[in-house]
Length: 237
Figure: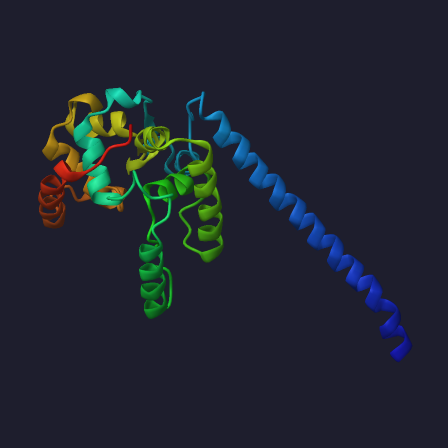
């Protein structure tokens, strides 16, 4: 019996090494796919995101996907300022990460015993929307950080923001600034007022909830705060 255990151990180790190698190769191939895809977005606009594709299957005909790409200069500066003021005040100057926000989120998650906050920047939110799922896990968060590095390395800030504005979720099947402007205000993204932009910006962390609770007192109160901060928001150029 002892001899048999010794004889089978090398075989088990070789099997583990093989499985590990397969996983490593698959992981590297996936990162290469993300890298190439992001590099192409310097010249090609993304037509869909992981979130959109998930919603197409989950929401079906009840909430058809509403999405229309518009160039960066056809999106209201009000909306750009409102989103930066609400979501990532240091967007222009950070490298895609806010270490303090990540650490604060880590501490809060430890206190709650599960993930409730991610401390995400605009670039991190874009990474998640484009490629990942809504699932909250540390594995997903790790992949999000890697994709964020790729975005910040391969694209300039204005391009990152342009893709974000055209891709971010704004309600049940509603994606991007143009679709959101039509859906909520029957106007175009270029004509959004400061107040409309502030309300749209406040909706972003919980778009489906605020789609169904448009008269929420919090939404109005928070939008008033963001409207006052918009003038100080620095835009990429």
